[in-house]
Length: 290
Length: 247
Image 1 (cartoon, rainbow over the protein chains, first blue to last red):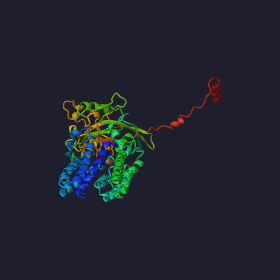
Image 2 (cartoon, chains in turn yellow, brown):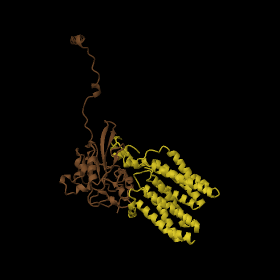
Image 3 (cartoon, rainbow over the protein chains, first blue to last red):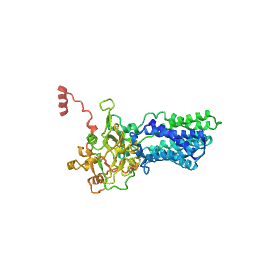
Image 4 (cartoon, helix red, strand yellow):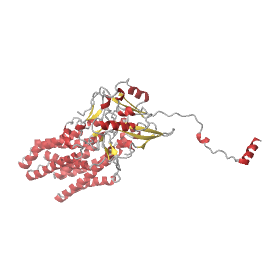
């Protein structure tokens, strides 16, 4: 799959933002006054920036409001509804914490649940797609949810919590990679089933339908750039989870936390890049590519 | 609503005969011609006269080679368009309701004025049947020529999808699979019509007919007939050779 920068930015930034709002909403971190203003501002800013980045991915962003209608069947629509609902429900809690120094746990708690559901819905947009076997697996949502919660906990200055979440995230990433490497074969789809000619013999593409590129190849058959997959996995694992987890064990200071945060976001960007670049869509079978 | 209907009154679809298709791409061209001028946004061509031309097509013909154990390899031309799946994954992922499967005839369509161009339906389709138009930025797909098959302004013989109408080999057939006595149902049953990627759980309506086994001639070992002819001398020596042979 094509690793679109807008999608990588969206999933990383928005995920971290909603992760922060989860902890602020549950009151695990209960800042008041200016601190609340800054932290809630950060949460709303990251979540909002991600949503705006995602809108740039659309061919017709002016019709985006229609995406709130199909929550009964579509995870993308559910994500839109949940994201908006979570930001709206959290708002009284955020405003009251910042300006009246009075948290409103009811709004906060409900908003946190919705924020958590938003992160899960984002993951399910990918995990539901059976045509991309690497994504269509239980190990996809834990990576998204733990990445968001770990990054959010770090921003919320819950260092012990963030430390353990980082380690859990590392385990989730490894599980996703290990399981993912076998998923295409496990899906049972191959050129034989794609053409239905597998019973006759060994099938290979003789001539593609056209000599040029097309939308399908650009969007779903991304074969370049996988050669550094191994190194990028190490970067994602090290920068994204292990090193931040170690830094969080040090005595807390702005320096170590900032460093941990920058490393974590860099690592997660690498992880998301791989998440798309390594994912093979079965349509590649019709083009002799995977 | 982008939930799928539990059942559809008809199941309109195609039978594509891989035994008969000659790979001429006429269906590709007639499809593009009709669908550029009719239903929905035209099918864009990008950089049509430049170095990297590409375009939106609803139907494309791939060509595969099958290497067989005991028989010569086989070349199979393979037209592919939307299969109008009963369990269409492209429909349920749509966040706006632009994608839908019609209850009356089972055709999967896109309401282009509601499409936000997110591309998720194209991701969900295992067959690559949906393409985002490069100019209009809305999702394009086979409509089974919904503007032909019910069109009473056309002569009756033209009320089939453009690809079926144009196929010079008769490799494409259009009909209602919900009727067991329809032409397409009987053809599919008689020839062992199969689904593409059944393991993806899409329950496609369109069926493909496998290539028939090729005839085998009872011929002597051709290689032995290709052995070089024994050298025979010409001229006087040749005459001498033949004369001595006759003795």
